[in-house]
Figure 1: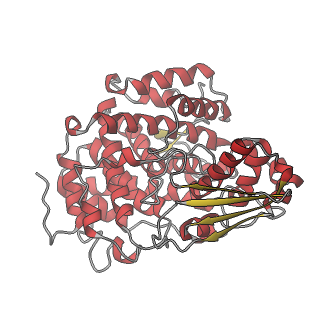
Figure 2: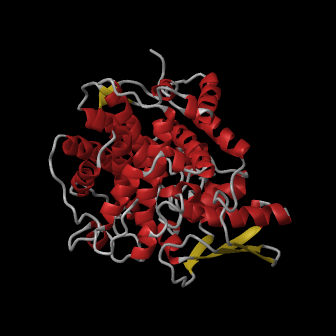
Figure 3: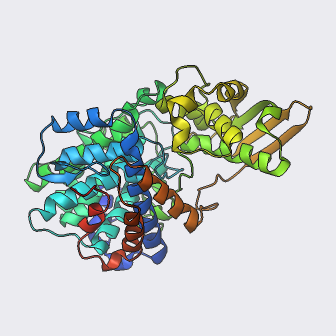
Length: 465
């Protein structure tokens, strides 16, 4: 039974949840969602091998030296477990294509899965094999921890929550597969918090560093788990103490929202797909604008201007204008750029962030005539509703509000759309993975409960020697 003490730091209740919840207690819809976003995250990690700075990032993490531990997805080679976690965490998040829990404003799989699968490989080398059921349990419980933290926050982003809170989810997931007892897991949480970091300044400046921060926190979760396992104590007021995470790295939170859903709401079922490789906050604008185009059939060159009314968080995250010479990291988080590409080309995929696309005159021209204004929504963490007005050159004004954005569980991608996204991402990987690997991975993840050693999944996302 999980303790609900009003005086215990919430981290203790999270530790109890992770330690005491058996896989048999997890409902079928949570298992299905975990499989979906495991496959999705492997795919976006493979696609991320073509992003800027990948080779520099690998060299920096491994100092150019191989070691026992985890393999690098889509590229190959082995690095010590913490470094492998860091590298794969960057690969998952660098294309802004990974899943997101909207209410928590958190990408729950980037930090978690990269740390977890690196740790799975490291532990297997010591004789501890992780099967599919254990992997599913670890993913679901880790997502519960990170997104419950984010979901409880009542103030806007200051630190980069997908990395900082995401690291708690990674720590929980490692503790789950390692079989940590309550005290060891509490030590690991405290030791992770001492290393947590990630600034929104990287977002403001449109830097690749933003995604690297997910890698930093994945690495630090691995290190924290190893330190705790060796008996190093961690803090106990980790979340709610006078200098705990929720008082220092966030500015306000609701304790009932923090703890009330544990064991009742499985947060993995609330996670939204990313149908486009751009910031989730761009998706409402893209969704509404493309729906208007589909309904009314106007060509992009008939548009005079577009005006969007968006929540303050959305405006803060993607209100940046198009500009000459912008880099992909900047453009992925520009509502005007991403909407312009969708309206001109009829799609938005990884090829829309190449140098040629970023400098396309028609895109820059239309993007300059797309603006977004904050609508005064009192929720500092809201992504919707988004209202878009398209003003055509013939004087017509067309309006559409997206109350729920495509990819949200209430407006989901179909299974076929999800699988096509995965196949495209695998084909995009640098290492030239065989197309048949996609079908084998889909089948393995569908039947993950029957997989005795989950390293077989990693075998299929690493180029054969």
